[in-house]
Image 1 (cartoon, protein in one colour):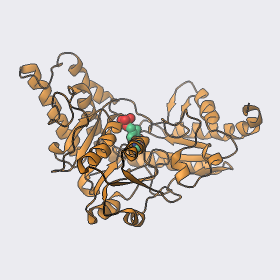
Image 2 (image 1 turned 90 degrees about the horizontal axis):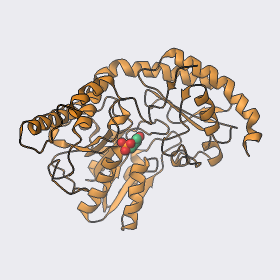
Image 3 (image 1 turned 120 degrees about the vertical axis):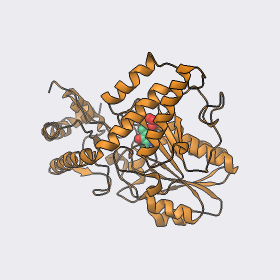
Image 4 (image 1 turned 180 degrees about the horizontal axis):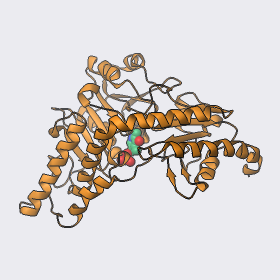
Length: 385
Ligand SMILES: *Cc1c(COP(=O)(O)O)cnc(C)c1O
């Protein structure tokens, strides 16, 4: 195949042409600083606040509840660190399958005296509200559970989990970076206090994201300076990226009624087509999973990076797990927490679809997988050095 077929949308997505079009003038003619009081500044401020309203509307929030950040990682760090500082200590509960943008800050907080409980999900990657309730203690200050997982695509029952936290008067955060743009979401429906999102996972630019904070909740700033974002997140606002994020989110949410069934059809065909290759299993929840998310364990290959490379040579861009752990020769902490043995977990394969993908591409990929997997298995001894 001459054309590159991109099937790694959980790692990042292409910038939507509409978002780019809206961004371009902000790099050139409309370059003002939103803090300036002259006309270019006023225009930039207006672009910033219009974007805030668009982002808020897309997730059912109020504009005053949206704070712009440099991405999902910063939003996650802000919540964990911010709540811990605000409360002056305490106990935090998170799932063991969170992204490292949650797990790594928790490791650091632990060194500062924070007590951390990591909830193990079941074999399908689901976190149970009962397990959460059992973990909550009198000194619990925060619960953090992701809306959808980035390794296996399992979607959590966030309303039920958030209800448990609220019953015990504990704040609830969800990392919705994988879910925003893939599922219809409203912060009120979810019942969360904090929600992280990242533009480059839904057709926006990289390096921009947002944190939703339910009013009247306010976190102390991580970054101090000029007092931007109502003094909570200093630094001259990235106006072009904020506008690109708003445009991409609005477009993605508007297209979702068409996109979701399209993605589900392609995903289900892919899962069904892979099923008759011996020694290949679906990971994650077969029902409650992101619409474009297919993830497998391929037995007998050693590390799946060999398969990912072979597919790449044939023009298919897929992943061996999460983008951040793909290069490290380590099994995913997510699969490990789900009870998958290390050796088997090394065979993880993640194929994540976007609205531009077609049925023909999936058929071509399936033919390739049917050819390659037996071939690589036969070659395996040679590949082990
Ligand atoms: C990609 C991702 C992040 C990190 O977001 P960035 O904007 O790349 O910092 C955090 N959490 C999840 C679940 C992700 O998939």
